[in-house]
Image (cartoon, rainbow, N blue to C red; front, side):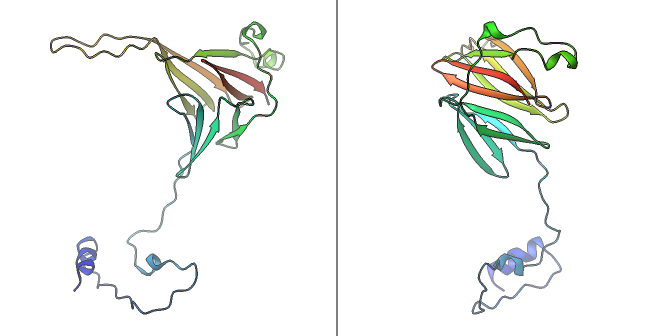
Length: 196
């Protein structure tokens, strides 16, 4: 019995060793692993895709099915984020005109007023003391930007407790009704909603 047969016996006790003829002819696109019996049926992942910022906040990553797709935030166009069914989608925007903070109004409390409102604009300062990331909540189909500014990293002494630093913030965007656009320029990340 070879070492591989012994290892298979450890993980599949009671099964006879699988013998494969090393001189057999393989068909194109065949999978030699499919010749081995499995103890359970293959499974598929039902995990939703997700988004993340790069550590320098110059890219947003769409992570889907083990693949990562990068989109440039500091390009002239920026990116647009929205929902395709229950999945998050990201595309490079076309000819984006960034609204200013003076264009924004208070967020309406009723859905009837949401179609006439001006876009909500969030400007996030990007410097060595800030950190942000994205979080998608599928239950309410909202994208959140979680961030902290004025972070100061310190190591407490042996008899000291760490002191909290920085200001935390959370900005939620409803992806059921809106698309989310982002663009970085110099040390500022501008985020705004666009009606679908």
